[in-house]
Image 1: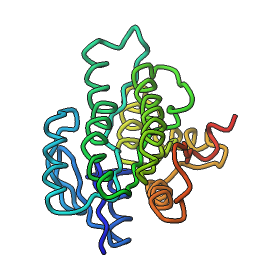
Image 2: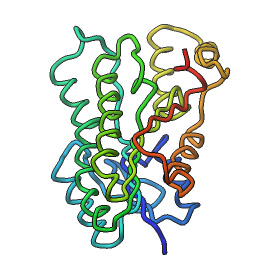
Image 3: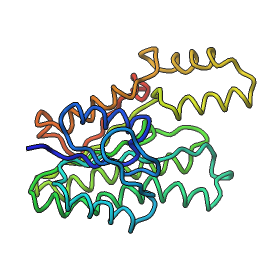
Length: 241
């Protein structure tokens, strides 16, 4: 029987790589995103809108079981606490944290009824460590790590597993955009900046979105049937020290 993945933010970057991986694994993929995706079936959805998320999951559940949920949608904000406005803080948490909360709350009843399911959150290296000028973003990614743990404990008895994947610096359109913006502001040479970023990673290179997708595929598989409530870094060794 074909399984179903419900994922947020799969129209680009890591989310797209995950969607592509699961299509290859013969999953039916539903993508909740604000823009049309190229893989699976897209439901246009603002993940910061609780009612909209609930309605999208209702529509999906009318068509299919929900075997796997991946909460991936999110955005970054570079600012310390003094330079983080209340509006910026609330908007970031509405997407990064409330979006994950809404999605989880919506799929849990369906997984409970089926007595099985896998929930995976896409966190960050900042789910476990701190970085400068990242006050609100860091808080949001720590919150996702907490949500993965509490969900694992609350629903293990129903056969539901919950984990968080914590990517470091990954080559995605957002990464490329951030480097381009930095170089425009500073006048730095893009090739040099990419080399510097790679050198910060103990493994000596930037990660690939496909590598994150491979980790998610493992956690969704029966090979990970005894794995729940855990955090999985995929950061080239960045958080080891």
